Length: 452
Image (cartoon, rainbow, N blue to C red; front, side):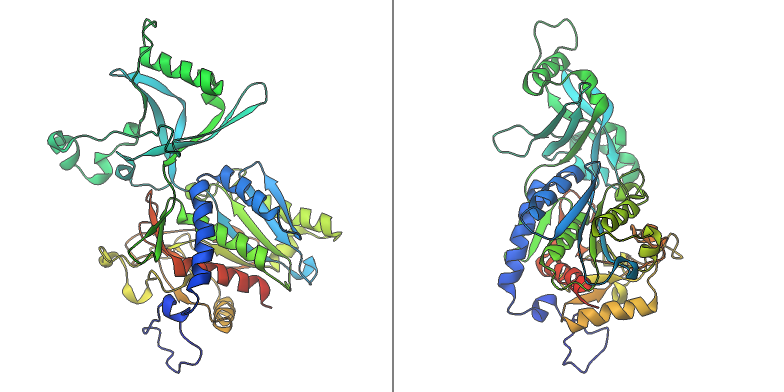
């Protein structure tokens, strides 16, 4: 909890704002957050996160990395102890809820060219309607070449959108239905053009769009089959509030933790143990696939570290002796919907990093729960460093819940706990985070790497 060490009051009910706790540190907080906003404005996909991180760490000696198919990466810095004594791991995910293009996306209807999408992760579908959208991704061609595209971010170029029904005609097809039924996934179609190719006999607008894609990007219609194209909110991260105390952006979940972990590894000094930052893909859909946390990429990374350090190790034994943080966000107490939270165990915006002892839903189903002894060590290093922190659960017991990658790393036998900032509007196209929470997250990850 954000509570000064000189205070005699250890009540968990009396919280201290992170801003009060870090009074006099506004310059440091703002400097950190400016860097973070630059990262968030440029990076909106897992590929872009990997590429950005590689560029950043290239300016620093002592940090090495292993990349996994352009969508996941493990960074590491050597510590004093041998690998057989275990390592420190901070794992975050770099994917976020979005819309993916279908394999055969392009079609024409009512003289409008559109792209069919398949939503990825847990979204509220209505939040993606009638707003500026951008396309980020990669097209792989048969000849082995790739085309990377970012369309819709600059003021000088067009963006995309999904149309919504006018309220005058929405009574039966939207208003009289449950929200979950009123907005169908098959209606999340991207508008991409309306100007026809007057020389074409049919599908004149689609033909014009295909000609444009060929002319500007050398893309054929069949190339969509071998493409990873993601539709994301258009626009940069923005400061929120008259006091600029918050940041609004797409993808705080979980790139806020990813950036904090990378910065912590860069700045960490005198590491007692080798520290690893693992950035993975596919968390939002269950950590599946060969770039998610369920893959054996972490074992491969540990093996690679052993090879480079000349240490004959068995990765599974190293991991069993390791300590880890599942760097992920939690939901902040919502001022408009407080009834979904149990207030004494809800995290609050602006009160420091949130330590989440367990995840899961209802009867802790699908949970990874940190041991009491590990929780004690975590809070000891946070208190020692005077870092603002709080605890939090994701809503009331029977309200819902959620999980993280913690349970997949826990299968190796390592100690692990979830830690990250609390957010408002989680999984929305524009999430809200407190600057002091973001900075506290960086401080906490760095302390984890540096403390014995």
